[in-house]
Amino acid sequence: MAKNKTGSAKRFGARYGKTVKDKFGAIEAMQRQKYDCPQCSRKAVRRVAAGIWECQKCGAKFASKAFTVSKTTTIKTKVLEM
Image 1 (cartoon, one colour):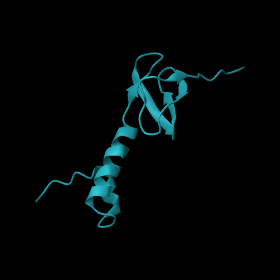
Image 2: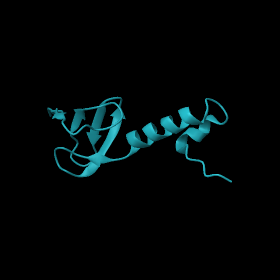
Image 3: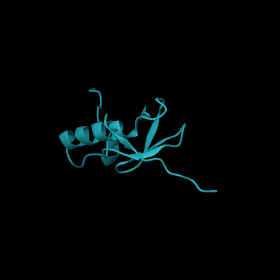
């Protein structure tokens, strides 16, 4: 039996074809992994929404690419007024 490489895209079953599911699985795996924070340099950045990323350690929230964090990011931290 061949190994299934679709990963999380196997939830689609027999629909949409193997090529589309392989591409979708690769993109979804990239967007769900943790990335390095440009502010504190920890591997704790997770995707909040499309293009919005947040560090779980220092709380820095910034915009970048939709599915991955680009190397050149402009950090815009949120200022909390108490």
